Amino acid sequence: MMLAAGAVVVAVGAALVAWAVVPAGAPGPPPASLGNVVDLPVRASVLDAPLVDQHGRTTSLSGFRGRVVVLVPFLTSCQEQCPITTGALLQVQRALSADGMGHTVAIAEASVDPSRDVPSRLAAYAAATGTGWTLLTGTPQVMTSLWKAFGVYAKRVPEGSPPGVDWQTGQPYTYDVDHSDGFILLGRDQRERFVTVAPADLRGAKLEPSLHAMLDTQGSQNLARPQAGSWTVAQALEAIGWLAGRTVPPPG
Image (cartoon, rainbow, N blue to C red; front, top):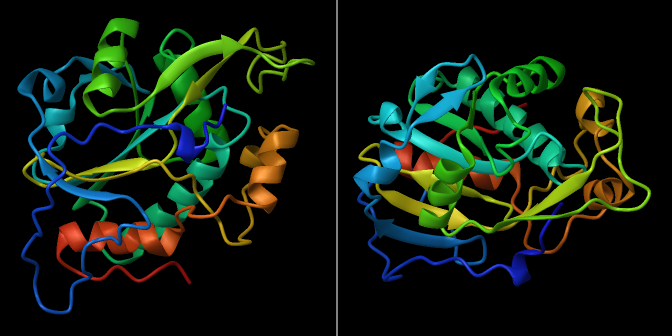
C-alpha cells in the first residue's frame, strides 16, 4: 500500500549537507524539492546484514561496494505504487545499460514484506516483470533492522475490501503493508548520500502490461495522476549521475 510522502518522517541523522566534488559537466546534487542530500555513514552491521536475492544466494549491501546503489523499498504484493516504481526503474536500467553504466550502478529493490517475499516469489516477480536487477529479502528481523537504519517506514495492515488477487497464486490477499516510497542512494564508499520518500511518476510513459495488471483502482489512479513532487526517471538519472560523476542520458 502506498503511504503518502507527507505522512512519513525520515530520520536523516544530522542533516547537514556535505556537497560532493564531481567533475565539471556532471549533474549537481538533487534539489531539496526532490529529497534530502546527506552524507551519512552506514553501520557495518547494516551493510553486512545477511540478505538473500531472488536466486537464493546469500548476499549483503557490502557486496555492492565500489558501485553507486539505488536502494528501493518494495513488496511483490503491492497494488498501489510498487509496480509503477518498478516500471520507472526499468527505464532507469535501460538508460544505464545504454550508457555503459550497468556495472557502475546497482539497482536493488528490497522487500518490506519478507514473510511473503521469499526468494522463489522474488524470482517469479522478476520473470513476470522483466526486472534485471537484484531483488532482496531476509528474515523479518533482518529486514526490520535494515529499514529502521534507513528511516523507512513499514507496517503490516489489513487488506482492503474486496481484497486484491495475488498475481502469482490467483488467491485473495490476506494483508497489506504500508511503507515509504522513494529510494535511497549509496555512494561507492557505501555512505548514504540521498533519500527521497516521493513516489515515481512515469510522465505518461506506458507501464508494462504485467506491471499494469498488478495495480488496483488506487494504483491506476496513482499512475494516471501522480501526486505533486513525485520523482521522474530523468530526475533519478540526474541524482545517480551526480554520484557517478557523469551525465546519464534518459532513455529515448
